[in-house]
Structures are given as C-alpha cells and as structure tokens.
Image (cartoon, rainbow, N blue to C red):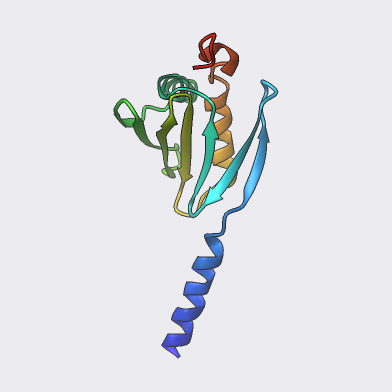
Length: 138
C-alpha cells in the first residue's frame, strides 16, 4: 500500500515539473515568454549581465525590498521575502555578451502571478536592446 502511495506521489511531482510557458506583454511593448521549469520561471533576456543586474536592483528598489545579493561578472543571485514571508529568488547567468538567462522562483511551488509581477517590475528597467549594443551589433 505504501509503495502505491509513493508511486502516486512521484507521478504527481513529475507531472508538476513539465515545462509550460506564459507570454508576458510588457508596458514597453516587448513580449517575453516566461517558461516554467520545475519550480521556477525562466526567460532569456537580450541584455548584458551588467544592465540586467541594474534593472533587477531598480525593480527591487521600487518594491522596497532589500535582497541578499551574491554576484560576480557572469552571474548573480538575489534572495528575499514578500511581506507575507513567502521566499523568492532571482538568478541571472550570462549566456553570451548580450544575452542573460533569468530565473525567478517564488515560494516552493512556483507562484506564477507573483513571478510575472516581479518580472514586470524588472523588465521596466531593461535597456532598449537597440541602445545596449554597439554600432556593429557587438
């Protein structure tokens, strides 16, 4: 009996880990695909790691949240809590010079509305990609 309960629980967990996406249309007219990956939402952003880091910090400032930060030249991790003690984290990792992988995790089961809300806060500070690239596109 216990074996069947464990198998059912495993099946539920595996089904919950499927990757689905939601399109976020932002105020700036950009459209991003937030993909669910396990208990997080991920998106690739056409920006440098430095510009994305500044956008994340400005978004936190607007939310009046002071995250615990760990960052270096190619990655960053921000950890914080909402007022209701729901933890969340934001991870950045550089894909190449002008693209960053952004991962948002809210709570333990991927709270999609809050992840989208955080992303919108951050995205409002992303630089226009036409200006973040040099004249030769590099």
